[in-house]
Amino acid sequence: MGKAGLATALGGPVAGLAATKQGQRTLTGGTTRQKDIGLLSPEQQQFLQGLGLPGLGEQAGQAYSDLLQPPSQDLFQRSVVDPAMQQYEQRVLPAIQQRYVDENAGSSSALNQALAQSATDLTTSLGAQEANFYQQGQSNRISALSGLGGLSNQRTFEPHIQEQQGIMGPLMQILAQLGITTAMSSEHVKENIREYKTGLETLKNLDVKMYDFIEQVGGLKDKVGVIAEKVPEEIQTEISGIKAVDLYGLMGIMINSIKDLNKKVEMLEAR
Image 1 (cartoon, rainbow, N blue to C red):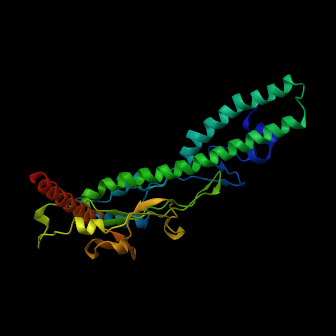
Image 2 (cartoon, one colour):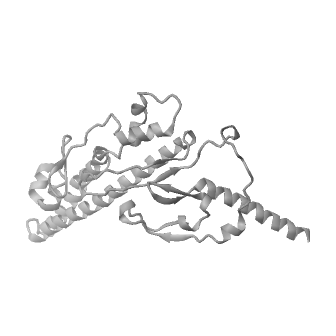
Image 3 (cartoon, rainbow, N blue to C red):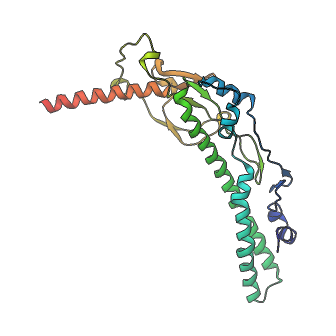
């Protein structure tokens, strides 16, 4: 039984899984078409220009466009949905049908219910996999882009996963804020260099919290970190008007704290 026959026979949940290369069927009905995007959006172009990369020219869009694009729905279709459908049609359906044939119930309502339930289970599984697929793709994009941080100077990248019509309907829209703080650190690009002694005493007063982000900034859950308003003012910064922590500065305080602890250990050992 092919995909079209399967959809006709079972209807409901499975009907939305039949797909073509031109348009992707959704579980909620309708189709979506994934375009090949070769150019960067104005926001992406602005981000690249803001990095201040040496020799950044007209070809930069082609060089970085794959990095900046959201995960491809066509890739999810080919790498996850199509293989799952093949396994379902070739192994799961025949096994269910054979079981009821062996019980002389090959045309019973129980068989139809079992087939419908298996389709629902497949739909649920693929929906969960799609969420993970886009989240992992977003994580990979952030990791790759953070590698550009050594060429930037305290720039901020705001990647978006655009709302896509996939097999779950409108899946998600994630706004992530990445403060690229692996800035140029050579003394040749700095001036007014002076001592900064803040260390252990300040670090001891910082509380580590677990928290959820509000939906307006992505809604990520169970994140761990410090509260920007509670850190020393000199390592506070802002991202799009929202207070943030300069992780590069926080690392400096941690280094000073380690030195303070080392001094205490040396004093104890000297007794």
